Length: 314
Image (tube, rainbow, N blue to C red; front, side):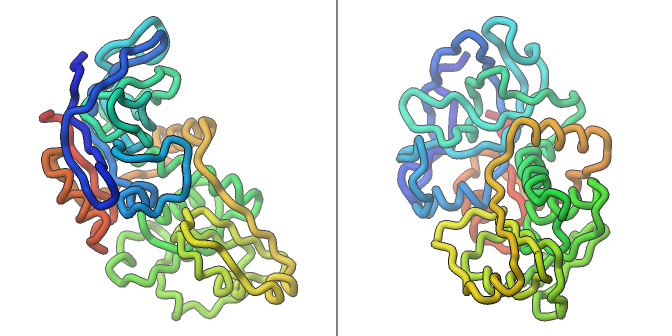
């Protein structure tokens, strides 16, 4: 095991380096993973980059971000986890000795509890970094209960996966709102429209994945009586809404948090069966040596739907 793999380090908000970090010694049940690809989250990681992340256990700088990782097991301590050589999805690591790790996945090598790893087919490729978002979409769909979303707000990767998942679970094709014309392409069997072109105000279930704290009044006004508003974005500003429209419609407001192991298992099974496709969602790729420009593109270019870093030359 290398004692000092290269990692993306947010030294402080707005300042990044690609530099060596120290790995902890593997404990019983741990696996050492050689990372092949990591995804860049424009939600959680952007808040860490901007310094806008609300207080969170383990938060502090310098830190290694990232929780969307695919790699191969180099070694394992004991019998826990998949066998060495297996390609796996990694939702984060045990951390590092000299920097914080929230969630500590954007590095060339990781120490991870074997029980957290998700075995993948040997043929699985870079698109498998999207499994965390697929599990997040599955968790949101399950939080919606019997009222699968009919309207989804935001056509980023999570919105696209949620729309695909609703169809995979047997729901009607949802409508997706997207204000950016550049992001309205890439739909798969569902319509994507500008909000101003939608005249409906009788939706049974609306799910917001945009994270826009100022949309609640608009969305409540589009619900029919007894409708449900599901909040599946991450909101760094206080949420507020006018009570009277919500009262007159007697709506439900639900919050979908992070995915659980059962969501990952279900999402991985849907992908493996072909019922949920991860194709066509990665728009940009960069070698890990270009991490700083990759993060700036992911956070600043509206044409970038999903950026991944390739660590295989590290």
